[in-house]
Amino acid sequence: MAKTIRLTMAQALTRYLARQMAEIDGERLPFFGGVWAIFGHGNVAALGEALYQVREELPTFRAHNEQAMAHAAIAFGKAHFRRRAMAATTSIGPGATNLVTAAAVAHVNRLPLLLLPGDVFANRIPDPVLQQVEDFGDGTVSANDCFRPVSRYFDRITRPEQIVPALGRAMQVLTDPAECGPVTLALCQDVQAEAYDYPESFFEERLWTQRRPRPDLAELMETAEALRRARKPLIIAGGGVLYSQASAALARFVEATGIPVCETQGGKSSLPDDHPLNMAAIGVTGTSAANRLAEEADVVLAVGTRLQDFTTGSWALFKSEGKTIIGLNVQPFDAGKHRAITLVADAREGLKELEKALEGWSAPPGWAENARRGKDEWRQAAARVTAATNAALPSDAQVIGAVQRVMGSGVTLLHAAGGLPGELHKLWQAGRPGSYHAEYGYSCMGYEIAGGLGVKMAKPDEEVVVMVGDGSYLMLNSEIATSVMLGLKLTIVLLDNRGFGCINRLQMSAGGASFNNLFTDARHEVLPEIDFAAHAASLGAISEKVAGIADLEAALERAKANTRTTVLVIETDPLVSTEAGGHWWDVAVPEVSPRREVEAARRGYEEKVKLQRVGD
Image (tube, rainbow, N blue to C red; front, side):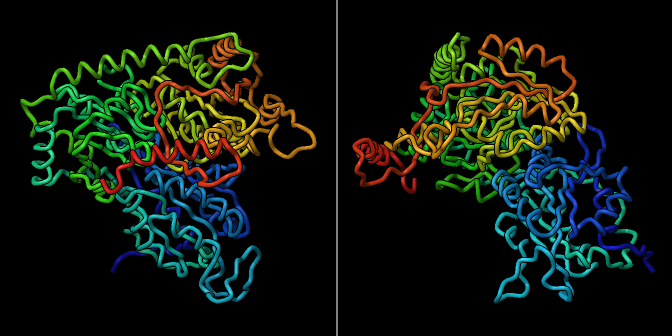
């Protein structure tokens, strides 16, 4: 008869999580780097006690905001290329719903995240309990049902034995390259405390390794034939290249075939920026080098990318008649987008097999030479906009140039949302794979500082630089205090343009009046004078406000020697962005308006829409 051990459901959950393992570069590590927890009445008594029992094997980290702690967990998983993950637990109520935005971030970006919100009483005797959301027509609903559309797997644990199959399914999703995404296990608070005789075998240590599906032979041959016919082939490297750790395979493939590469936000750093055939960013926030080739390409090999609208220029970027899209992706849903030839496979294995199938073939030499010339021209344009100046209010690009010159390409650079993604995608010169960390799939303001904390937890020996605007900083800055508390140093460069400058520029480009984005254009009695340096200092950081680019560079040099999170504040121009590179983005302009500026923008919009390739 199988041996059993009597535990509460919460104790079984935490013991199981502590026994799941991963192997990274030959080292066996816990799959879960820990559990982020903000306790309340829905999780403190049972799950809190269970976490205490395993605190050495499965560390618990206290945060200051539920959304932020889940962002940190997401960044940890991304920094590990999805080979490890973290969990986050909250009480029932606002703590739980604060996690929903982070769940959407993980869902869109296909990243592992385990969410463990408290839930209502399964026995319903005390209903309605504090913070319970009641549905007048459905007694089974709780606030946690909000997680259903933003979870890859959702389960509500209403009996203690249900945790056994639920955790098995959770681990399958968290470690599957095609299904990977957030898992939500809603834990009824009475069930957390109930005991059950669990089989001891359930708690045996298990090693989870990366599955690498190889391509179907027929799909491989069709792909190879399409590329052999190509005169102007192009590769788009997406985040899947990094998650598959396929950078070396991509470099070999590119060097064997002579096909130029461009990178999505998620795929940037797939190749070093100085690789001669890396044209860098593509699409709306792309370089002139990449976008010029994309317009001409007759075959586009999209590797590990969702082909979202910023990559395709709202599907107006690729202009070659009769072009062919090839989707090399581990997820069939992504591989088949835009009527692509599908090559469903792990990125690394797919590139290896494709290189063999194309042995002896390479792109026309003139195409690669054309790409190199375009890259040289772009490098010169980028150097001009990132050069240091004495401007009272420098541009974002000039700040980026300063950070690049002082910190170099060896740091991990993290950002999200607003104007910085557009500038950094074009201008940052990434070094090794994973050194450029962008959250631009969900474009979530507030991810930056919490995400930087998660990256630092994954890479404690590396320098992590966070670039953030004042808008995102004001939304979510509390994890500065957490970074100080945990002794995890970040270097945060805060660009203060006194509002939401990126959206203000978009508003104006669509013919709208500058309205409700910058402080000066929002309804106010008094304009706020926010002392960001003093605020950061109050959270425990070393901080200073700098007067310009020269001062910023000197402050960055000082920050290198600091052992505590450092926040450097610089005021920037809200109206200036890099004109070089880029591409049109479909943001619908009103068809009628009393403003002449809107009417003019609408006429321009209608011309651009004609370039979109509907169904192509």
